[in-house]
Length: 169
Image (cartoon, rainbow, N blue to C red; front, side):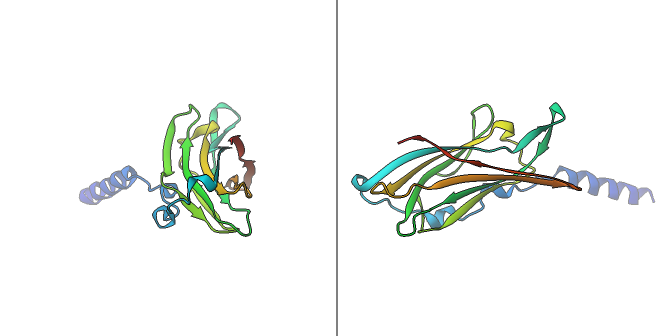
């Protein structure tokens, strides 16, 4: 009996200490989407800021409620490809947490890709955000950046969206 208790204690101890893999670090095979940009003369560049919330305050400033974040990157152009040059994720203090890709990727006409930040990944905090640098040809339709934050616990559910704001031409 003594050995059984020791074995159960060891299993419990080591299973609690394992790091949970966060799926948000590689939701899409970004490398397969990389592309060489067309000549710079034909491209119009922009930067978009997208606020996201990996957690929100609940009851008071000392208690937070974790959220799953889905960042949606959309090419609204029905005819032309767009290019996303990088996607950088920052926390409430403005410190970069991660960069999802640093080589240009493409989105085909009307294509949408997502970045998912798991509910357990609270690194971003209540004031997290993304900065996207992008390029389009001939001042065509600009990309759309949105985020959906959601969580459900028991019978309680919470969801809301945010939209990206272009901060430079």
